[in-house]
Length: 369
Image (cartoon, rainbow, N blue to C red; front, side):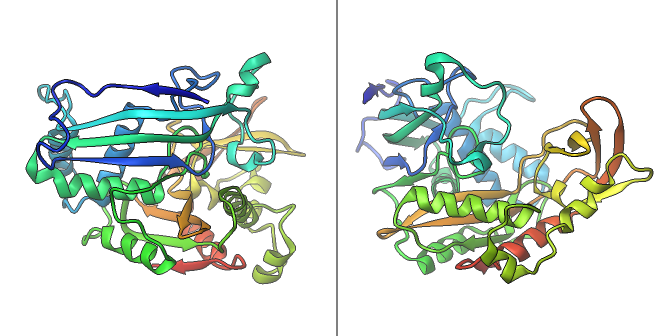
């Protein structure tokens, strides 16, 4: 196991000189996929990257913000995290990894739904350096503005409860957890109550937000890997038309072609289609008897899934968790065949709610709103 130690910048206060920082012992409950300085393999011995965590805090700060409109959000975000538009402003939030360690390993071969199509397969020794296993570290988050403390803590707690690090974190890879430093939930009721305490009291705005979010908590498992597998199987069961687990078929009914009738079966035909699956993230790759299609926004902008899969440790048990944020979705999409032919379509925003409705029927899962 390789260990890396990084000293904090000298501009930081000595720990204990004031209370504008938090230090946490963090660990990844599931393997961290890549997320390093190159796209081919991990940075060995460095599972946690401060810039990536800072970006995650920025995302979860937006999701938990109580601000009322976009201009207010941008102004406050710039004051906290810095920016150059309208004149450079230094960040008031600093993130550092004081120490960290991990063991390199290959991408788990039994979790294909977690990774999907992630580019060309690596060769030679790079195959054995695709993920960080058993990653642990000491995280320090500091804020230089006294008034920012509660906002930063809310963002940090939301990231720890629902987020991750590295690639494919919305499919449960790199699920982070912590040992001490912030109150940890020990029961499902604690977890749900903490989530509800982070929800801003406002209507949904044009950015991903916890306002109006839906939380699904799965059954307890003996290990993080088992919980991750249950979460992945659950996501796949809801969306797939083949290979669905029998117990879920009994719960939801035998019609497994609901999604396909909306999009894939209509690709290449005259007229537009409406895709509910597009509401769950784009692009989507379809490969079947009709050929290979890529479904994407007509603007060709990536639309990250609003559903975050997470593994959470509550006391001695591990639970898969799905959190669906609310926010804007693309409207116009198109399905392009890899060897010619494009079919225009639209996004059925109801697809997200249908996914959540079906996921709540997974055996052992419960929905909270």
